[in-house]
Structure formats: C-alpha cells, structure tokens
Amino acid sequence: MTDSGTRNNVVGLGMAAPTLQRFGTAEQQERWLPPLFAGDELWCQLFSEPGAGSDLAGLATSAVRDSSGGTDDWTVNGQKVWTTLAQQARWALLVARTDPSLPKHQGLTYFVLDMHSPGVEIRTLRQITGETEFNEVFLTDVRVPDAYRIGEVGQGWAVTQGTLMNERVQYSSAPAPRGSGPIGCLVDSWRAHPQRRTVGLHDRLMTLWVDAEAARLAAARLGQQLASGQPGPEGSAAKLEYARLNQEISALELDLLGDDGLLYADYSERMPELLPEEEMEPGWRYLRARANSIEGGTSEILRNVIAERVLGLPAEPRPTGIAWKDLPR
Image (cartoon, rainbow, N blue to C red; front, top):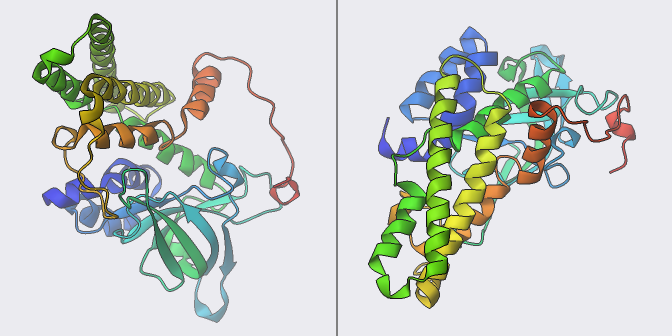
C-alpha cells in the first residue's frame, strides 16, 4: 500500500474491511477488499445525518427498491453529514431506511455506495483547525444495485453495530510505543521549556503520564482480544479514555507554552495533511482534540453503552414498538 493510501484510508481499513469480512458475500469481498488493502480505492462512512447523530437509528435517508426494467436497484434520497474524506472516497458505507412502518432499529438496510454515482453531491465543511476533513453529502435519486447490499434487508442495524464497534476500537487498539503520541509531544514541550515549569504543571504531567501508560497497556490487551474474536463494548471504554486523554494532554501543553502555544501558522481552508501528531503544531493538536469526544460516538453515548452492556445498569427509557414514521421529529 502506498503511504498516502495508508493515511487516507482509515475508514476503509478500520471499518469497511472488517464489516465486509464479517457480513459481506464472497463476491463482495473479492470485489472490494483487494483494492481497499492496496490503497487504490478509498472509503468513507455515510451514517450521521443532521437529525440523526447520537440517535443514529432515527436516520431518515430512504432507500426504495425498484425491480422494474430488468434491474434490481434501490433509489436513495437523503442527506448525510460529518463524512470524513468524502471528497476523496470512491466507496461509502451507507445505512438507509427501507421500511418506515417498522420501529426505527428494524427498518434499516446496509449498502455500499459508489461515490461517483449520479445524484451524489459533496460539500466540504470547514472545521475549527481550518481544514476541510469533514463533509456533508446530499443523495438525490442515487441508484444502488441490490448486489451492493450488505446483509439482509431490514438487518442494517446489526451490520451497523459491527461497523461502529470497529470504529471505536480503531482509535485505541493499536497503541503507540511507550512515551510517544500525544503524551510524547507533551513531554518534549516540557523538556524544551524549563523556564515555564511549575509544581502544579508537573503534577498534572505525571498524572497524565500514568493515565496514558495505563491506557496504552489496556489498548494492547484489547488488541490481543480482537485477534481472537469480534470487538465488543469494551471498545467504547477505550475510545472514551482516548478522547479524555487527548483533550487533557493538549490542554496542559498549551498551559505550559502560554501565548506561544496559540501560534498557528496555517489556518487556510485545505485538506488535512494527516501527518504524525509530533509533526503538527501544539495549537493544531489542541483544536483537533476537541473532536475526539464527538467523532466515532460521543462520550455521552459511550457512557450509556458501558453502563448498560458492561456494568448491567438499567437502560434508559426508550420508545419500543412504535413505527419510525410515527415518531416525533
């Protein structure tokens, strides 16, 4: 795989590949996996919508089957948002509603969508770093062959859960070597600015170092578990801690650097460079970390997952047995 393909194909490697391996047919795996692993075809994820982010099962994008004219296609209409690298992707993981008369979790179906299809419109979103990593995607009468459906009709939520668990795990199951990554950047700044050190900052640094090492070892164990089975809710805990650590480490680095940490050389609207964190500026690391507690499942939702599926606490009240079309929106 090319170096650029490795960096840019995070959705393909972390989400599309394990989803296709678990739920795809042999023909689908043969078509999509080789160019995915070679870095020749990039992937994105069409899940979140303006009205369905944390409550993903409430999504409104529709897919209607049309078997007339000798073809077996689906016509897709809707809007997706926060789609990472959609402007570069050839293929997308898509969840759409195929039966609005069923409860929201039951009327979904999972597809692969060709991002070059007529009716696909991509609009970039400029984020707080100045970059345009995320996009909104408008789907207008987009035709998707039934051969691109992953899993059975109406079983899209089960496939989606498999994708989401892999998404959360990819943030933290491949730990960097000890003392590298965000905590390594912080330590480098600490060593380079002895005149700015205080007892209070030192205490915060030592606490975060211990937390980062514990998270690294836990992620290594999680990676070993994944080698012998499918990811489970433990990935939610790892991703939750990853977000907290990144935000607290980057905040401490700015507290250490003072005004110098606010300097940010390039705020132009551009594609992200996807360089290693140690090659980015402290101001960029601080701003980009703000997204860590939102992307890949918000920290609030992950706490619910841990409470219900790991700790066995009572679930939050949810409407059951109500058709999606009858839910207030």
